[in-house]
Image 1 (cartoon, rainbow, N blue to C red):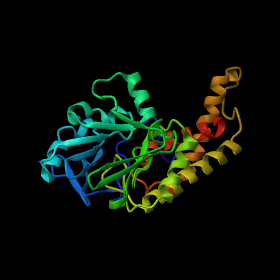
Image 2 (cartoon, one colour):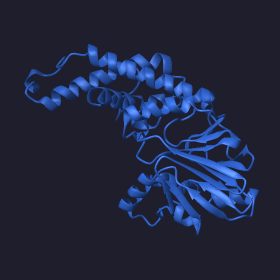
Image 3 (cartoon, helix red, strand yellow):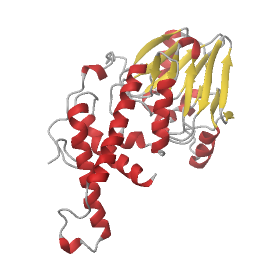
Image 4 (cartoon, rainbow, N blue to C red):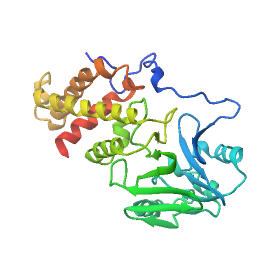
Length: 309
């Protein structure tokens, strides 16, 4: 039997969130909180989604526009400055991170990767206006005395998902890759390229920063959070690989289903995932928030990637 309830099994309560995953509380009357990252850079969050804004001499550079923060971002900016939003940077094309762009950007210049432009052209979503400025590998957004270094490192979460580095503030924003203190969202945050996802986690760990803005969860991250996630996904890969190598086809399958290859492989994949889950639970079950929520997803994703990628 699995130590963790499999997908589709309803339970009375999920595991408690570890203290290490929690962040500062949000004032219920406001619905958001601001974190001062230094030298005119701020994060605004509802402790589920995160956006970032940078104040310069003429206005504000906003990074991402999640719909859940649409009503909060103008108020958060107004707490700091009355200057207008002059630039909006898209981390990537997904609507949950930039779906309030049309409402918040106004006449702002929008900057994004060229792959994000391509995806937004396909989506034809008026809530996500097309960027005015795009780049292929690197772009320096310098406005007044403020600077953001934008870079692209290939597909992982999705094409066009960029790294946003504020060097003076020693802050790095990468969305939907690392989740400080938490299990990644299901299926390794819906990574389109699993080997690319592994490579980007290692790359983030190698970079020079103090604060990580991840786009989600209740707090900012540190280099230690990235290391923890890298260690988890390496253990995930090892556990799934071991299960793939030690699990035989057809064990426990009704002989009458032997001519049904879909049933044969469903039986095999489920048992590989079960072994993977049970291998990881003793070490990681209480170290990462929501481990029990998505560990089956992660094991299914990992074994598929190892067999196919």
